[in-house]
Image (cartoon, rainbow, N blue to C red; front, side):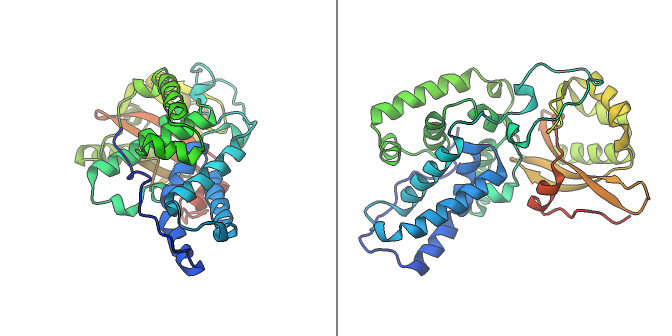
Length: 339
């Protein structure tokens, strides 16, 4: 995987940071730290909480930071420890397809707790604006926050997860990671080898990389939105790959294939008729806020954040996240639309 950021190496200084300088520097690293914590935790909300806790701990320990190591390395050490604390003793987050086989469209919907699920995150929270001019860095950043990749990371123990992200995504050197984790280079290399083996066995390697959106894909998305808003199920299904996946957290239901997705929209999902879509972006892919019409006809209420995965001219993934009370504000979406 292409590096998202540079290594942890940066000039050190023997001059202690002053509070005003620290505030500027902390904000400078907020986006990349959020991306790191999101990959570690699989939740946009936990990632932002972890970064805020990192900032608080940095302020509290400023008197102990004397410039002997790079500020970036110091912040990543704090953030890693925060993530380890949050991950201690809890089950991994997942996507519905990680929890069992695909189901028929008429399966009874079963809700699982919020902490069960990998959650989407807006691109602008985790892809630093400074990478906008470099297509290779943008593609690498997008690839490293895709839902399937974050779900695969969740299979790793916390230390292996941190090592893989730091070495493979952020391209830190082995000795830098060893210093951050207070361990040896041999231990880092061993953890990386085990993490690679686990990732190689995951479904992430059975999917195509995220493609940069070209004109053809933009047209595909336009046809999808048009078909969805007209609730033209046959046209909508014609835009899907034959093995497209459909999920809808917090329900553990997931579907595979155009026939089951068609059956869902013509059955349980038929109340999506009349919906409106507002474009956003999430996890390096196109996304939409979906609004359903109110029974009164006076506007629309939020229903889901749809994360759309596209490959080779077809839609291969439709992931609907229904926690609108938290997610719509996160994505800057209004909590209702006027008629």
